[in-house]
Each structure stands twice: as C-alpha cells, then as structure tokens.
Image 1: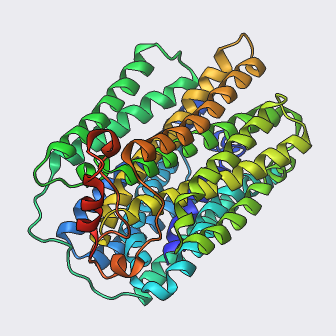
Image 2: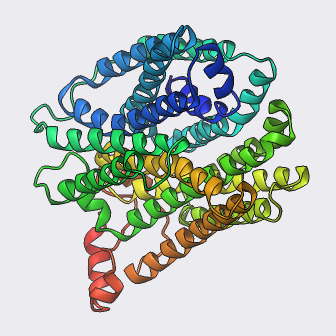
Length: 481
C-alpha cells in the first residue's frame, strides 16, 4: 500500500520533462503556466510533510491515511482527464500534497510495524521501489513522449493510486491519534505553507524572468526566509511540532541531514541539466534509455542497504554513495553534452550514489533518535530534502542557460558547482563526525524497535571541541540502556 501510494508522484515527477511540451500543446497551456503548476505541486509536497505531523497528533491516523489515499485518487483522475490548465494543475497539486501526507503518515509505522526480523526486507523493498521509480521515470517519460501522448501514463498513475486506496481499506486497523492533547501549531503550518509556496513560485518564474527581477527574487528569497523562520521557531518552541532541537544539537543526525540534502541537490541538478543538454540530439525514448542505468544503481544500493542495515557499516554507506555521486557528475562533466558512453556510465554512477547516500543517510538520522520521534524526523528531513531537490534544480537550470555566454558553457559551470556540492557535503559530514567525536557503531535495533531509546549514541554537536576528554565515556555510559 505504501509503495503504491508513493511511487506515482515520485515516478511521474521524473518522467515529466519530455512530456511537458505535449501537455502544454494539448491543454493550450504556456510553458510558464506549466512551470508554475509543477512548482506549486512541489510546494504542496513540501508543505504536506509538516501538515501530516500535525494531523497525526490530533486525528485518528489510519482513518486519515484512507482519506489521503482517496484524495490522491481524485487528484490523479483530475490530472489524467484534465481538459484545461486549471484541472491539470489542481490534480497535480493534490498528487504532490497527498504523496507527502502518505509518506509521513505511513512510512514510519511501516518501518517499525513488522518488527525487527523484517526491517531489513522492508528497507530494501522501499529503497528499490521509491528510488527505482525515480530512476526509471525518464525512460517511462521517453516511451510515452515517443507515442506523442501523455494521458495513458497519467491513467496508469491513477490506477496505481486506486490500488493504494483499495489496499489501505483492506489493511485497515484503526489507530488513535498520536497525542490528542498535543497543541495545535498554526504558526508552524503557516510558515511552512507560505514559505514553500512563495519559494517555489519564485523558482517557477525563472523560466521567463531573470533571477534578480522582483517577480522572481522577492518570493524566492522571502520563501526561504520563512522556511528558516520555521526552523528557528521550532528550535526555540517549548512544545515543538517538529523535532528540530534534538536533531540539530546532535552530531549524527546533522551529518545525515547534510548528506541527504547535498546528495539530493547535486544529483537532481546533474541529471536534469544533462538531459536538457542532450535533448536536441536524441529522441525522447533514446534519451530515456541513456538514463536507464540509474535503475541498476537503485537495485544495487537496495541490496547494499539490506546488507549493512544492522551493522556499523551503515554509517559508512552514505560516504560511499557521495563518492559514487561525485564520480558520476565528474563523468557527465567530461564533455558537454556527454557522449552516449559517458551518459550511460555517468547515470549509472549517479544512480548508485543517490541510492547509497539519501536513504542510508535518512536511516542514520532516524536511528539516532527514539523510534517515537521517527515520524517527526522524516517530516523535517523530507521538507528540507524537497526544498533542496525540487527548488535547486530550476535555479541551477536558469543559471546554466544564462551564464557563460551560451547554454553549453553554462551547463559545464553548473555541473562543476554540483560536483562541488557533492564533495562539500561528504567533507562536511566527515568533519561533523570528527568535531563531535562520533564513531560508527553497530545499531542496537532491539532497543530502537522496542521504543527504549535511540539505536546508537550520538554525541552533542561539536562535543569533541566543547567537552573535556573524560566527559565522553560518561555520556556514552549514561546513554546506554
């Protein structure tokens, strides 16, 4: 049920690039309007992560999951049957919103609901399906674009969404609210909604406006400022909706978040820019097949995650992923646009890097806090990851088209920036471990799954430079059950 709920929007987002001109022509929608619609859908995805946490606190959780799945079906049918831009945009925005609502409402219970014996299989299946859907998206989009249509793909998405709704009913077990007495936090919801909508609106305007124009820069900068205000507000709140303080004051979660964000930003930028540079030279189907090795990368990394999930090597895997990601971007940068051989090799390395970095980094961050916090951990990480992945891509695409005198030179410059982001993210995580005095540890998953505490000890941020050497053993001993 969870896979059928999450795969449609995530796969569709990766498949839309070759389909947008066809959709625009058939619905009489300008590319700027299309860009706005896609931006608002991404904003809805980001906002849904915070909204899901609030609703889970005060409303019956499984009933809300059924409602989310029903709304996902409605949005998918609206998008597939759209007769005008308004229907399409409303449907796609509902898809984005409901996907993130289902992600936060369903994934944490899934991760711990089957118990310790099945957590490895759960992690592997989730990883290969979600990252596999993103990896195979360009190929599916190319197949559909080569047929000069788009509705068949959207109807398939609607059918998968309907299957998710049916499965949510067949597996229904009523669950009470997480904390009926939890305070409502309209300020957090307002900051998240206003910040995400403003930021993604500004980014969507880059298709036809310059970066420093008021219509672009003001909402983009203002939206990011509101998201920062949300983080500051939750950090200082006595009863926060999101677990900002416990995450941002602990070494291992911060390192995991840094890796997840930089990997998402670097990989999406590299893939989108390379596809744009190659688009004039190949048919959509041919171009989609060139990125098919990313799917192989998703399969390999799913197996790798399952192998190391219960071992200390789990904390090393994100660093391995960042190395592969940097190598993939470097290969794609050798020649702009790259040859077919370079594209196949670069996309394969990038797929391995993304799969080995993002999902393991999320597990590293999640295992560093008690299982009861998992839903809130996923919420803040997915909010920031959505901003990093979906917001950075259009900004860098604009820079690639406007700097360097021509798109080829601009793409090369931005690929260098993406490579720098990947390397900087890995180095920052290593530095955080060193300054915090953290060491890779074997996770105590029995303790984590039973709700007794975190799976391993995570020292306070910068503990190695703030504490005396004798304090660390005492802190570790106090953290043990």
